[in-house]
Length: 127
Image (cartoon, rainbow, N blue to C red; front, side, top):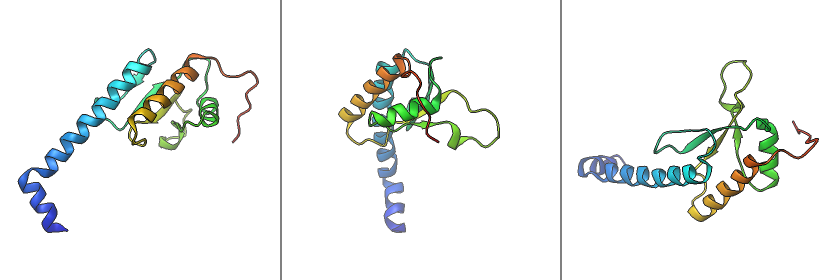
């Protein structure tokens, strides 16, 4: 295993694989910008994920619950917090978890529709 790693480092295979990964992630970031760019997004050009600041109508837990009912998996900021402060009104969307780019695009479109509408009235949060 170490010999393979050494050879790949020496012959440029590792750098070529990393460059390909950066290119693919860059394409996913551009797709996200195209579909959700009218929302406040925060990420790096080749990041595996994007943070989305929520519109005023949504709370992160409400959106997470509604997204789950729509078949979408998003994460609130809570699992990433280290301090006991109020969580930011943001969600984290993984752009690398879905292998199929067409399915990712469909999921981002569905998420965009959710973000653009108000939450259902009297939505009950399940904790």
